[in-house]
Image 1 (spheres, chains in turn blue, cyan):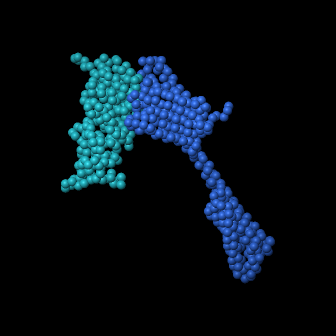
Image 2: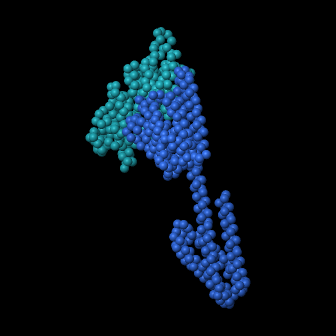
Image 3: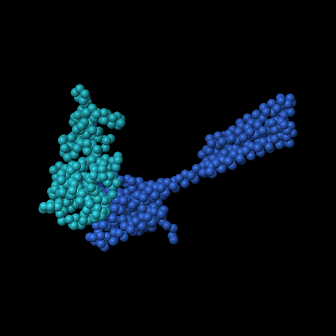
Length: 355
Length: 254
């Protein structure tokens, strides 16, 4: 809708400019240079139409020499040459018209008059061409900024989408049903622990849903969520799951997109711990190196277990979310050594402004 | 029931201790069922099944090393009623439905448990189920086995599919040739074929499936039959339809 409106305004402006030009030219021919009014109209109208063509031709020379991406001397030279050539052709057309008019009226007054005027007319034609150049450069600039706006909008929509998919993937049905089954078992074996697990699960769900609305959270909040997650998984896996944390104090205030580490922990559990009969470990390291935050999630894994079925989905999501927020300033590296799977994230360390 | 009540021997297989405890608790109201063993992983389950010869098997699907499907492939299924127990796996559930295998979804109610138990006692579906076909059906479309489980005596080994040279049908068994050795497995060759990626393995003959990468060349043999010669020199017969399949795959690979 916006676009068609601008189009209409533009068209109107062009018509007005054309008519104004015709009126001024006619008036000049009659009053300043004393041309017969019929001859003046007959010459001015077609010449005005041609002048519009000259201004229109500027569209091609402007497109071929976009501002900011062309050497200045080339822009000046192109438009100088084009202006001179076009105004020369334009005046030439005027001559022919005047000559033709004279032949019709069997006189040579108009032609003579025209000869006298030609220097002025070169100026007029050249100026009109320059006007066209200015007009088209403006038009291109406006279009470019509009496109840039659309691109920005599109990329923000995409980032939002990536976020939503990531959030939807968080609450893995497997995790949920297995946890509920553990609670079901505990109700008769150990009611107090059943209640604890209910609370841990409720906390985890509440935190997950609450965090989704925020763009970033401090690392300490993510750690709180991971603690709940691991508490639940520890009920399921018991001795089979050990956890190690090496989190630098200075990193706890650093900001990160919510639920960035949780999928990595879930991967570690599903593809690492759950595949090892004798159990395994997960280690989280967080360190700040100057203005970069480095987070590493490692877990033991059994290369022979061959569970690559869902591998990658969680990792890809984490990568997408990092990219959406930090662009090229973020890095994700995943490596599988013989018995250790490691994911390292690095991105700019930001903290909340002192409040 | 009349006459002396028959004692049922049950095996509980789940890698989560709480899940095993839950099943044990639910079975505690059934004096006719004796829990022969609890197993925390598939390897233990295969061993325990050989040792105890259970009548009833509660089998978790997702376990370390061997899945519930693998266990089913490896045990003597004659006379065993199997109830799969799983948290959530849309593909597995669909496969169970298709193959009429009973299953419990975690968490389950006592009613649901009793119903499954009743059905298991009246029918013993274990024998009729082709475990490999069940496992293949439980895989998402486009996913194939990454390894094959075989049992040599009491030893269970996992063969990565890339190491398999070819497989030969021998009555109720398939012989799997890999690294110069042959492993016997109770399985139909079509069941095996179904589990393998059709872009890597091809059925060249009624009795043979071959790893495409091992095929060195194909030579005519007799009037209108052919043989495939593998990189290790082994010669395998190629049927006419087998040759069409093989040629198509080789052409695709360029």
